[in-house]
Length: 179
Image (cartoon, rainbow, N blue to C red; front, side, top):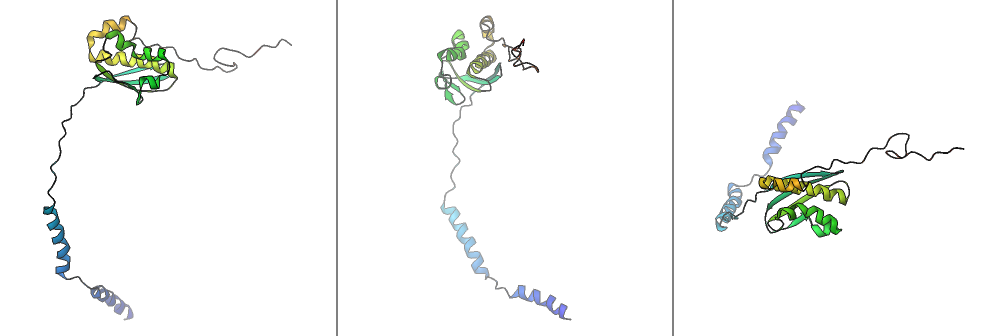
């Protein structure tokens, strides 16, 4: 019997919790409802976005990979979020990277955005050349003869040769000792 008394006591305890009157629970809901009409719903602002058309090209050189985007613009050239002169410190590398634009005379007509990684600055500049040339070719196929004659569409396949066992490098052996 004591177990039955405990079981009956639990529902009574739940019933003893003070219930809020219906007027109190309805009051916050009424306040929330009255606040919403007071604040006029903001009309969605539609921005007139011009959708830019990007042309993509991928360039590789040594162990560097460059992903290049080109769109019609004013001549902006960014490499990894930096300006060209900030990223490539040496003038020769800057000229290399922009040589495809100079040959096709599109330097001030397009914006170029390059993401490049791997290797050193020389390989990255070479990868950028190929990427820019491929993106220009995708943008305008009539530039193919100019780009191909200058060698911008040819991948330079030279890579570092791997080290061999029993040698100091790829080909260099240890110094020979006669005695």
